[in-house]
Image (cartoon, rainbow, N blue to C red):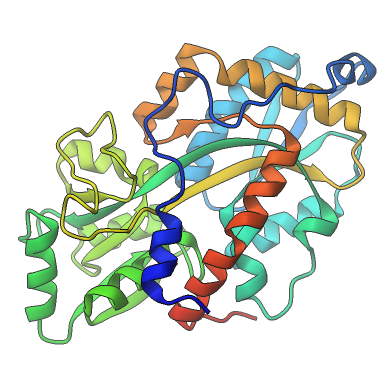
Length: 339
């Protein structure tokens, strides 16, 4: 197994998060005739499962895309939150849905690259039961503290404060084995901070606990925290992107804040049940490609704390497989295990 520093160095190879002139992962769409072959799809509203609670980053960003997809394809894309078990409940519902093109989901790096190493048993398998459509977005995590309860104004001050605190600190995440949990464990173990992980069902629960002073720190998805950071109720100490986030130019990267080789991003892709006709997948993919090329949704994503992407289905598969060794090692370091 690689050591912890090698793991974080591997994470540093992930792409920088400044939005390029065109979306990342943009090889030519090979099956241009697929859209025509899809006929009248979608013929009725499309159910889009989000395997996490409302108000988190996956929920917020998927809603933006569902609105655009409905306008472009002529049928509503209706979001349904099915949280629990690190996304496994929602993905199980997707895997069991009829492969007729009218059920989709937003799967994150957790479902593509983490859960198979975390859970002893799963009722679905990503390579067996799931058909990726396209990468949709990626985003950094942000190190945040509640302004009223933690005096640190920089990451270095926070590290010193945490080490001096009797009994250590607590850090929140949207659940055991999520990328924010694993990022927090890597941060804690690398810097020698005594910290207790407090899992929640999503940022909508984590944020109130932090604002009340029950939890001291989070290394969570930026979109979930951007509003409370803008309001001043949370203080952003660093972002895990390779370069500073454009809408938060005063917030340093982890490297600038004194923690080198800590570039860790989260990402997601639209998926459908295995067996959906390729013509339907291609039409869905083509609509996402057109949306990703538009300035308005790209700007909206950037303001929310994410970068809008597009890819072929094959590129989404490849990214999930490429990151599995890194996250497998992160699970091992954390000691996390779930049934």
